[in-house]
Length: 226
Ligand code: ADP
Ligand code: ADP
View (tube, rainbow, N blue to C red):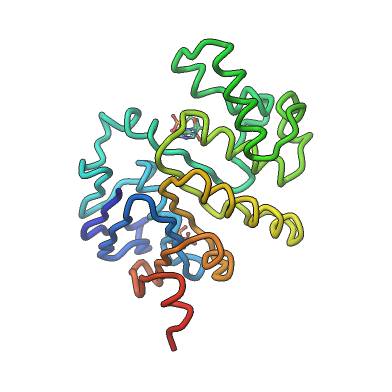
């Protein structure tokens, strides 16, 4: 689904990625793990064209990621960041509907899709009328999920999706997300610094350290490694 080939990325004198070769298979749930600053978010942001390699290539579905085809490619990728990444001045529903409206979906189709996804993501329907600041952190996260799923993309990218939540809510949402991922059967790539969460939600783990992939394998194999 995604391939990174010989990818380098620097920010000034900081080396964020150093020769990353990585293949992310379709249908898998992959977690990028590793200490803070290892390059996890940079990899994820590259998959959706929010960052570009200094050297090397990113391919999506066999095609190089291209600036001029980015919008088309992004429609096939749902992207969720911490706290949902919602616009504060738009209601939750308007946030979620933004992309579909831009694409000219009829009002009725948007309403139906929002309803179905609210149910799927266990978000109370009246939450969609509220502004992000009026929702709990967990609800904002669910709105972020609803927004990312609007166009039914085959791929879901999640950057520390539960990072801002308190432990009890986080635990609940982990269980719901696990069930959701299993039901949707999408290709999922997530970033987390929590190895237990990664092993719980993903089937493949990729360990990054100082901008390099240092280990890669099934959740079980990494767990059993010495
Ligand atoms: P992780 O997600 O594993 O915590 P990141 O991919 O966010 O790591 O960052 C990798 C390295 O690149 C870190 O040293 C970070 O400080 C640096 N970095 C990331 N984004 C930027 C940026 N926009 N400007 C400057 N440095 C950055
Ligand atoms: P910018 O480059 O200024 O962030 P974008 O066109 O990338 O603007 O995105 C506009 C809004 O739509 C952002 O809030 C972004 O998070 C959201 N968005 C873009 N692509 C997707 C996607 N594939 N899935 C979900 N939300 C998306």
